[in-house]
Length: 475
Image (cartoon, rainbow, N blue to C red; front, side, top):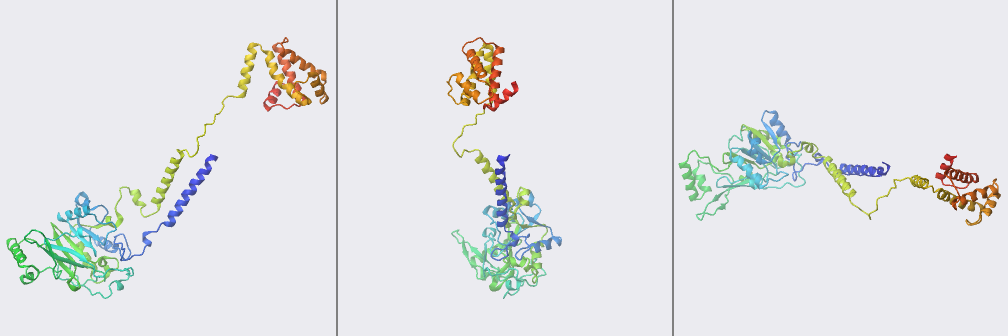
């Protein structure tokens, strides 16, 4: 455990450093200021560019509203059965791709109603209305100095707009206050030459001619097109005109609000999101206009939040921590753990042999040799093993050579001890006689070995700790 303590402390410190770095680097979305260059038109956003006030008003007024957090193709399935109006406000953070636009327009063609509130919507969401092509054009692009929270600056030098026709969308609307940055909705007829190729023919004004005014119709259409329109009117009196209907018109005859048919449904286009934002909703009759746009038809009203970056995920746990540094910290911790597991299984230095642990005890060898000698009655060999060491330590104690005569060794040892030279020499002679083939028995061998150990102990000769222990046990 102590060997791994340093590793554990290192891991804890690394995780702490990652948490600190992610916490310091994390910037909450709510702290980012609202700008018209990069607005947030989400119904969750309560800032100046958000549309939460509109959503809450419709919800509290009893209109069936919801936040759509799935892809548009789900409108064609069971999820979109109750949806009657689909609302896209502002330039989405996630662009609408071609397949999503096709699914959304197919839903409209089946009877749905698409409301687009944007200054420059995607062209794929604005299909042609019969022979009419619809597009938008910026009159004044918002700069970085535009303050969306300042309604006076946003509407500076702007005249209120009045309805062109008393329609369902302009019911109870006297005037509407747009911002300085509303765009002009342009639409023009597409002529069809005899060769079969289509050619766009711009018109001097974006306002479509009234259906029952033949003089004005001649001003907009060529003689051939006038006859074709007249033929269609006479042959099918109940046919719905595909021409866009202008409801609000700005300066220079530029349309601000129009709608037109697409299949069995309709597409409504409002060219200024400021009218429905939290700041602009309270100006003039902007709220009434927004209510007419969204609540004038029965059915569920779905606000697109998927393309506002609020799409629903399949994992609710991940969705709960979305927008926080928790997910980033968890990912880094998992990466760190995988890196540790990978490095633990790889050699980073030269291979080392495994430690060889000798499981046998040193006494096993001694016991085995003693048993063999006892069975073979090799008592002289046992005495030789012990006497050889005793003679060596006695010679060292006496300060003479190992091969010196035993008398000389005994005399010198006696001079430094209390034992007599005769006793020492006699013991040495008996041991040497047993080694050289003298008569010896088991009992005599044990007695002789015991006297050799007593001699070493009495002289205080240095022995190994194991031998001292064994000698003490025998005595």
